[in-house]
Length: 117
Image 1 (cartoon, helix red, strand yellow):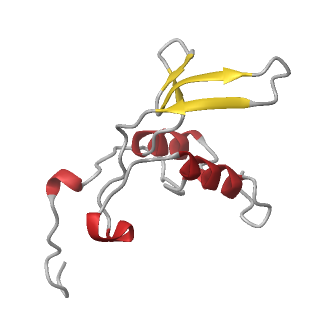
Image 2: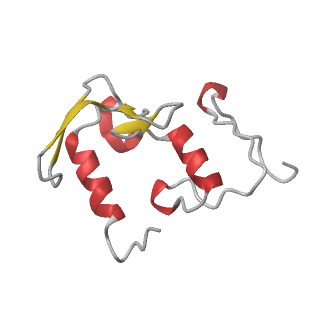
Image 3: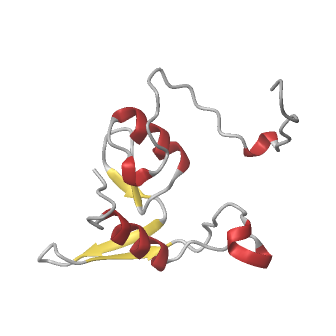
């Protein structure tokens, strides 16, 4: 960095990821191809995840129930999942993940103005 001061950072907070294709976005709402999806999957956790056999398994959700109609899903969340520290969260710098975070994310994904793929 010839014309600027060296940037200081905590190496334990740096995400290093090798990808042969340019990553278009690290925002899961805009992950539209494998390169983006694979990278965002390394950064973000969801309610569930896929195992090596492509079976759905718990992640932030401990367990869930699906109504007989298949239209209502009820998730029980783990209480030991925290956001990374950030001034956004104020004095304590972090907080636990809660159901409202998933409501926000799902509403964001379905917002026509966002045009998520």
